[in-house]
Length: 68
Image 1 (cartoon, rainbow, N blue to C red):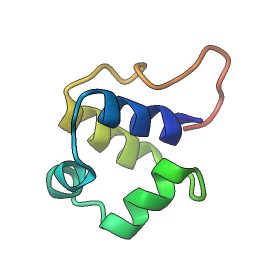
Image 2: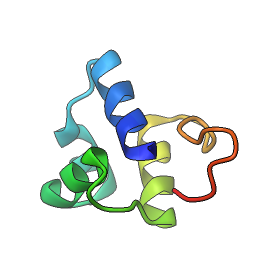
Image 3: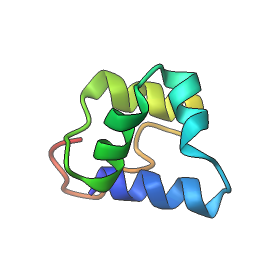
């Protein structure tokens, strides 16, 4: 899942979730749900996350994956 790949990226790069909360404006409880997979990530949220992390939009999308 995309949320789990984002979470792994954060951990691998020593980035705290609070950084994303501050940069994206996504509330911490919502971000936690997205990263755990219990809530889908909306397109604009995904865009804001990728922009905050300065990564390409395809970074967390697996081949053949149809939804964020």
